[in-house]
Image 1 (cartoon, rainbow, N blue to C red):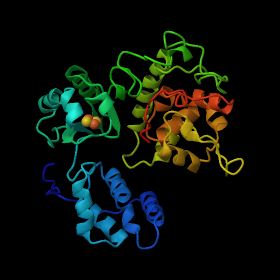
Image 2 (image 1 turned 30 degrees about the vertical axis):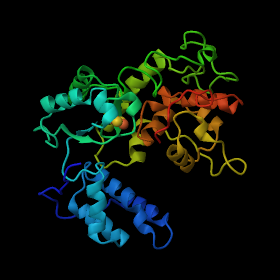
Image 3 (image 1 turned 135 degrees about the vertical axis):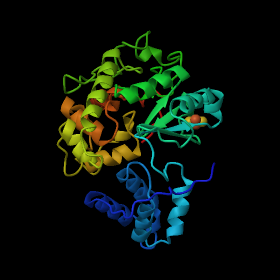
Image 4 (image 1 turned 180 degrees about the vertical axis):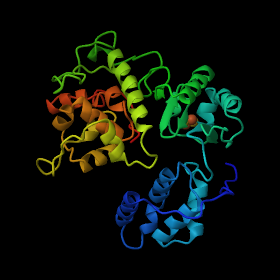
Length: 357
Ligand code: FES
């Protein structure tokens, strides 16, 4: 860990946009009286997003004011966590994991690419496109070496694939997030070694998960495979690129909903779950506690709702949740159709992909 200082040049003031201000006040209200300081990371993160992925001093002071904390307490948090950038960064900010598993799998060579293409650590390229910093473990050790660029992970890197990735980003070409070798989650690099009979001997085009039901829309993958399918992956890559191209035309401070509205159509939600609680959406591989909560906030409580998503709705939800393409890759719609019919999802049959969110 190196010394982390605030940027020498600072804006004069900072104010949350009305939407971000509402978000901040909602976060603060989640904590019992006297514990509002617990919202500090959420507020700093939103302030950073609003400020072009770095934290100006006035933003830190604003957060301290909202939480009734001494500025020093908020500074301690902002300077401790490397997720907070204390000076301006490039439009593509690379966080390179240099911790032991990544280091043993070739992070040093990736670092050399950063140095040769971008320059020294924390340097922002003249065109403002890139900057990089070395960070501690980002929790994707199984797919080492890896980097995070803005909000996306890029895993199973080689110096060649990483250089190409930077080249594609610079040129505005579509890039693939996640594993650069195509493996799903942290599955074995050589393909499945167990549970292969569930999907047929080749592990790609088997009969689907037991109990599978056709998905409710024609676009959805009705047959699940642990590695996805080439057509689904190709569509995910193309769609991700298409969505990112549209999002690039929006103002930098566009809200998640504005972004989603620009690329798709919000699915109809329910005012409340049918019955006391809804379905356990976390049975769908790819949905963790955070995404389940966000889906519930959209009125999505049941497998059959997800199973019925149209292409426009998949685009909307994927963009709203900040991961266009992932719903296809992880086959949420197909899994939901199976689960709605009383069958199982990929998580139930042991396809081990830890949910990040
Ligand atoms: S060591 Fe690199 S992600 Fe964990």
